[in-house]
Length: 324
Length: 205
Image (cartoon, rainbow over the protein chains, first blue to last red):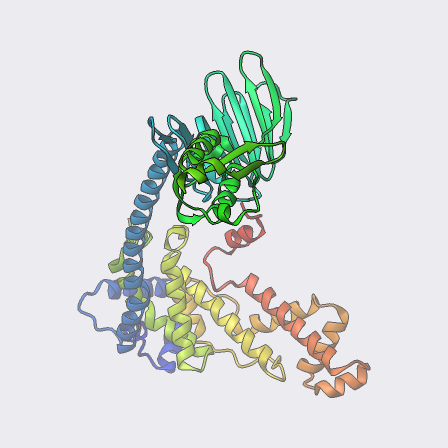
C-alpha cells in the first residue's frame, strides 16, 4: 500500500490503483490516518523526484508571478520615491517662487534729463519723462493690468478686454486702450488724453468719476481736492514724449504741416511762391511752440502772427529786400 | 506548530521557497483531479495554475482555520464547476441525465479535505436546475425547450409565436443568470467571496 500511496502522491498511479487506494482509505479511520501519515512523510522527503509536469509548471509560475512581482515592486518603489521627491521639490519651489514673485514689483526710474521707453508685459508702451517712477507687479499684471506712477509719463495702451489702471496719488485712470499723458507731482495730477477715452476714479471717494474725451486736460489739486477739466489748444504738453522732429532742406509749407501735427495747431501760409519754396533745416526737440516760432522768425525772413484759429505765416518784405 | 501551519505562516509572509515546496507537493495530485473532468490538457494546466496564482496573490488574506491544501482544493473544485457550467450551457443540448460518477474524485477529496462531498457531476445538474427555477417563466420556458429538450430555436419561435431574436435574447439572459448564480456560489476567482461581494456593494469612498 505504501508504494501505491507514493505513486498517487507523485501523480503516477493508474486509475485502478487509485480506486484501490480509495477503497483502502474508506475502509477504516485507521487506514485514513495511515494515509495522512504517509503523505506527511512523503512531503518531507527531500530526495524524492517530482513529475516533469511539476517542474515545468513551477518554472512557468515563477516566471509569470514571482519574478515579475518582485521586479515590479522594486520598480514601483523606485518610481514612487522619484515621484515624491519631484513633487516635494516642485511644491517647495512653487511656494518660494510665488511668495517672492508676489512681493517683487518691477520698478523703473528715470533720472534728471533722462527719458525712457518701457514696454509692459501686455506690450503697451509707456514713455517716462525725467524724474519719473513707474512700478508694477509682473505676476499680478497677468490678471489685472495695474501700474503705479509718480512724475510724468505718456501711456500708449494696447487695446484689451482687461482694464488698464494707472494709479497716481489718489487718482486712478481706468482705460481699455488709448494714448494719454499723466503728469503728477506733490501738488497736482494732470491727465491729458490724446486718443480714445479714459475714466478717472478716486482711491477714497468711490462716487468720484470723470470721463475724458480726446483733447481734454484733467487737473487734480491735492490741497483743494478738486478736479478741473479744460480743453487744450495744443499738444505742447506731450511733445516731450515724441521723437525729435528732424528736417533737412525741405520746403517751408511741408515743414509747417509737420510742426502743426506735432503741436496740434494749424498754420496758414501766405499764397506766395517765394515763401513756400524757402528751404529749412532744423531739429525740433520738446521745446515750447513759442520758442520754436521765435527761432524760426529769427533765422528766416518770415513773420508769424497768432490769429483766432491758426497761426498766419507771411514773408517779411523788409528783410527780403535787405538780403537782396 | 505542525509543518503545515508553519508552511502556512511562511506563505502568508510571502516566502517563495515555502510556496514552492507546497506547489511541488500538491501540483500533480491537483492536475490529476482536474483531468478527471476537463479533457483538454491546456485547460487543465490553466485551471491549476490560475488557482495557485490566485492563492499566491491573495496570500495575505489566508486564514489559519483550514489547511492551505483544502483552500487550494476548494478553489480548484470551484473552477472545475465553473468550467463545466460554461461547457454545459454552450452545448446546444444540455446533458442533464446523470453521467457516470467518477469515483476517483473522492480519493482527492479524502486527501485534501479529509471528507467526501457531493460528486461534481450531481452538483452541476442540481445547480443548473436551481438557477433555471429562478428565471422568469417565459425565459425559463424558452431555455428549457431549447436546451433541455434540444429543440431548434426556429421551431420554438414558431410554437411560442415570438421572433427568433427574442428567443436568442431569452437564452442569453438565462445563460448570464446561470453563470452569475453558479459563480457566486462557487467562486473560483477569490478565496473569500463574502468580502469581495461586500466590497462591490459598498459605495465608492
